[in-house]
Structure formats: structure tokens, C-alpha cells
Image 1 (cartoon, rainbow, N blue to C red):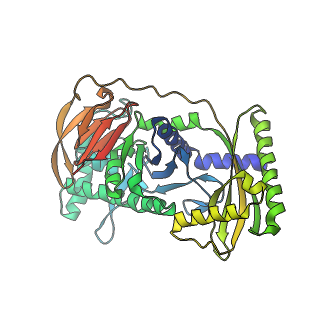
Image 2: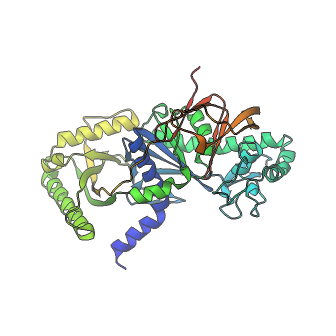
Image 3: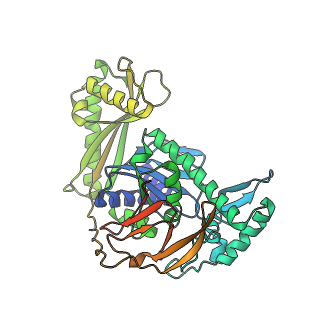
Length: 435
């Protein structure tokens, strides 16, 4: 096996699952007309958040996998050790904690009755009455609410509170961890959460998304028609793409002019040669240059998108201005008079693949069919909650929280003070009610 092949396979093994979910979210957001999205993929062990603007996924270098940095171009994802299977426990000081250990798929949450004994975040939602109103996993999983309550009882006794209070505290702890890391991601890119939607998917994304969006003061939450398989969609619609890099490590001065133009041309030839060799010479493609740049003396670089003609013409004024703008956006200040260094020159080549067409959902002709009313413990008290089947919803239907929307691959929990509208593509658009 050659070095390049081994590198590609390593990237695929480390990043393919998470990246596929982000790519699926990007495709869905573009197809449905949402320009500013944070993808929220919550599974059993983690919550993964990525930035998507105008259909483009934010890229990063030096991302952290566990305790190790990976210096390869990748989707910029923040992973939090909180998911539907995160385990609850009481530390030596008698304080309730959540995660990062997880029950995994086996044995899984206690309420799934597959051998789990320690309560999880999913068991917390079940004990609070927000789950367990129908089978999951296309009838492969039956939620046992009584088993979930029994699993929480020892922790509730140790804390001296009720099962529901303990379970809700566990949910708040999980949301708090997600809040901290998601805020860090937004700050890293200089973004305002009030301008962004969460696109919630994965088995637990719709279950927890509204609670996290509420804390972050997001624009709202989008729940796609089939959240459990959005990652699979991403694998199907992903474009052909490869990244090329050349380290220059030079000041933006006329002395760099010839090198900059020749290296940009060499990168373009390598990229086009790779595409022709791997996929054929008749493939359409696009090229995007960028560079890792910094002020002289800084110990970190930022990735700056560049125009190809700036490099070919060695337009240092345009390059310097682009870096200043990016620095201003990220950190709130820049210094147009300070010398700038270009460390790495990057080129991404991408070729589109065929995409499926998202068919519109039939419009509603009758009121929302409520299957039944149930009780759920939300925000410190019991509420009467409507239970609605996702399969019964049509475009234009509207609901007011608290409401539980059940479907085969997940459960969507909408707390009080939030409303739901079904759009023409079948997405649930969940927003805070106006005061």
C-alpha cells in the first residue's frame, strides 16, 4: 500500500461517519433554502456540531480526535462527549455527573431492555415522559418507561429528590456540556447564534435539539423527515474532492511573487492531474485556493480564502486585505500596517456528483391529528402534552409546545414556549413563540 493510499484510507476511517452527516445536512439545507445552519448530530456517545453557511461546510486543520491533533484538511466539527447513551453517575462529592462514558449500542439505555443497568440521557427523557409512547427502530426497540424510572431511583434516593427531578438535572447537565463546546465553535468563527438554525439529526438530535437551541438563543431547530438516516444521505450525495497543500513560509513581499505564482500553478496542475487520473478527464470541476496566514510574530495561522488571479498576478494588496478582513471577523481587530506571512498555500478541487430530488410534501387539508394527550415533566413540573405521529403531518400543519412528535427513527421533543411549522419539504421548523 502506498503512502498516499494509506493516508486517504486513514482519513476515511477517522472522519467518514461524522463528515457524511455534515455533508447530508449541507445538502438538505441548500435544497430547502436555509443559508446559515449548525448541524447537530447526536448519537449514542457524542454530539457533533459543524458550521454550514450558504451550503458550504466550514473546514479546519489541526482538529482534535480524542487527545490527538490531526493535521489533515477536514470538516471542522466540535464533538462533545454527550449523547443519548451517556451514563449518569454520582461523584465522590455527592454531585450528579453525566458522561463521558456511554452505554453504547450494547447494552444501550436501560429502557431499551438489552441488559443496561446504569441510567443514560435517553432514560432521563423516558423517565420524564418524553419518550416511550411508541416503538423505535422500525419496531425493533420497545421503550420501557418503568425500567427507566427504576434505574434512576437509586440516584434520586442518594440525592434526596424525585426521579423526575434527578432525570431532568441529568438532561440539563448534558445540555450544559453541549452549550459550552458549541459556544466555543461559534466564537472560533466569529458567528452570532441568533442568525443560525440547528439542523438536528441522529437518533437523539431531535430529542435534545430544542433544549440546546433554547439555551443558545438560536433562530430555531430544523428536524428533517428522516433524521436517523441523514448521514447515509450525506454519503450518497458527497462530491468528489481532494485537498493539495504546499508550504511556502514567506513574507508577503515582492520577493515572494515568482514563487507564489509558480506554486499556485503547480498545485492546479497536480489537482487536475489527480482528477483526470482517478475519475476521467471529462469531469467538471471547481477550484478554491486558500492560505494559512498570520501576522509576523503570531504563533497561529488562520485559513483565508483567496482568488486565483491574486496569486497569478502576485496581488499582495488583495492578499493582505483578505487576511485583515478574516482576522477582523474572527477576533474583532486587525492591523493593516503589520507585516503578514503566508505559511501554507492550499487548493481544493471538487467535482459534483448526481443529487436526488427532494419531493414536496402534500399540503394539509385537515387539522393536526393528535394521537393522544400524555404527561411529561418539563422545566420543573408536569405538563399536559400532545402526542403526534410524524407520518400524519402535512405541509402547513402547525403545533404549539409542549408537544411530542413520534416516528420510527427518533422522537422530537418540543418544550413549552416553542412552536412547530411543517414546511413544504416535510421539515419541522421549531421556533420560540413570540412574547
